[in-house]
Image 1: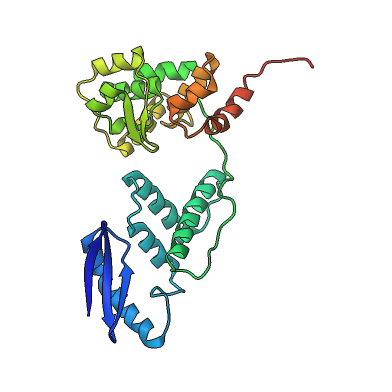
Image 2 (image 1 turned 45 degrees about the vertical axis):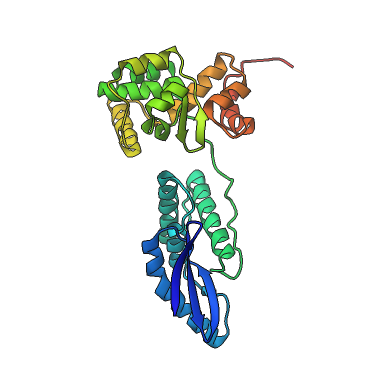
Amino acid sequence: MSTLYNQRGIWYLDATINSKRIRKSLRTKEKSTAIKLAKPVENEIIKNVLVGNDPVWSKNTPLKSVMNQFLQYEHDWSPATLNIYKQKLTYYLKNGLPDNPTSRSMVIRCVNRMNRWAYDNKLVPELKKLEGGSRWEHRMRTFNDEEMKLILNDVKPYHFQLFVRFAYYTGARRGEICSLTEDNIREEFVVGKSGKRRIKLNTQAMSVLDETDGLWEYRPTYVTQAFKKNLRKLDIKNGRFHDLRRTFGYNLIKQGMPIYQLSKLLGHSSVTTTEKHYAPLLATDVGDYTL
């Protein structure tokens, strides 16, 4: 006989077998998921009690099963983070590691996170770590003055152009602007990838807000697709929406803003992160010199 119960938001299964009570976490906050997991887990408990094995979860769990359980687990991630893990792990399951250094690094980090979780939850007997999770190539693309003039004035529709302008004038991320609220504007903060952080609404950004007919309620995928479509029409090659943020930081540094202040504006976790992204760009601006 077994029963489900919820403790601090997590569902557990209590099973009594041969007068022995066994309690197992189902590692989910969703009751519907707990109900689906209950019977298989109970059967596994019975099996292991009868043959004297432990833990409940098989030590030879197939990769696909581990991946599914990892993605269904309540990690307290944002929908965007969950989608990234789902994409990278699905790719790895079907194709292995990609050749592109940056994509390869991202997939490795997702796989290693999953492996650590599987090991901690006794789904696998040993922790296996893939090497190369920190070997990626920093993208260095920034828009030049001519490209920025086209982007800030010729992107269509106009409401989306205002979105693009706001992104450039604040250095905010795509997702942060998509979820912008009136409270965010009043208190000058955004919520996104790095949680809640302060932003600076300069005169240009405030001018954009004065022109908007309500805030933007775009889906992040729409922003990406609309921006790429506009770049093709403007004949701007190899551009991405995130390059606006990099151009924002690059231009402020060229104007003399200290790296520490820029790091705060960008919401980086440390100045080291900012230096990693912008030091290669600044090296291209070093003029001739004599030693």
